[in-house]
Amino acid sequence: VPELPEVEIFTRNLARWAGGQTLSRLEVVDPRIWGAPCRPEELEGREVIGAYRRAKYTVLDLGSWALVLHYRMTGKPVLDDGDVRRKVRLRLWFSEGTRVLFDDARCLGQAWILQCANVDSFLDARGLGPDAWPGRRDGAWWAARFNGVRAPIKAALLDQKRVAGVGNIGASEACYRAALDPRRPASSLTLAEWTAVAEGVLGWVDDTLAHELGDEIHFVTAGGEGCFRVYGRAGEPCPRCARVVERFVQRGRSTFWCPRCQGSR
DNA sequence: AGGGATGTTAGAGA
DNA sequence: GTCTCTAACATCCC
Image 1: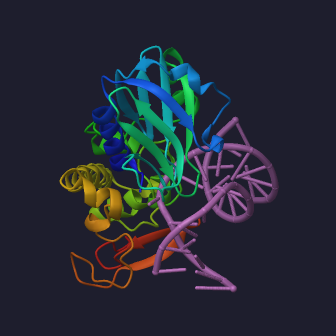
Image 2: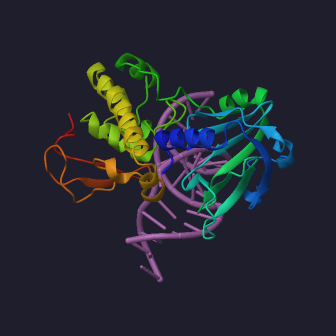
């Protein structure tokens, strides 16, 4: 379930598992993982300096070179516990015996090997806007970022060029927290409503991180849906007003909302 | 069997 | 050029 909070946790996990160790071997189990031609052996023998997140990307810093990961729909880094049923695309062997897998059922995830000096320009070339978190942006900042956008607010929140990190789950959850009709044109929101969006997005990330950090095993196996308020809950009662949560399709993606407390105006 | 799935991007059309 | 939307990617699960 990789949106910003999950990628943040994936990245922290990688830093914790591998930080300070040397990457002794980078095993390419499925070469479709590569987003561009590269030489995996370039990274072997290098020490992991750390890992950081930008939007939904993880950058594993190996000094002068870096391994950049994007998980798309189903990718995730996991400790290799010896189970043989995983859909492994990469296996990273570290000097103290730790083995980390890039596990990806659908194989839509991608990886790149870049010189560290080129990572920023690589990410910038993807057209990523500012990260939705951890910066505490106010309503005026959000209003300015979405100035002139006529698309429905829920669809607009998915545009990584405006603000990076919000995915299809986060967009529904943020609209719900902001009590906003997901069909409202972004350009029609008042400053007060943008303030609610700002708080909704931050609240969604903060709560998701807190939930998943509190129980890492639950997260890895169950996807963290335990803290969804409307996503995936069509037919269930709204946590705020008990009206039935509904689902509809916007731009080919599911939107979940409560038609009563997210009433249009 | 068929439909839907957390993301991104190329390409078409307005 | 800008904005918007669809299809495609590959595989699994309900």
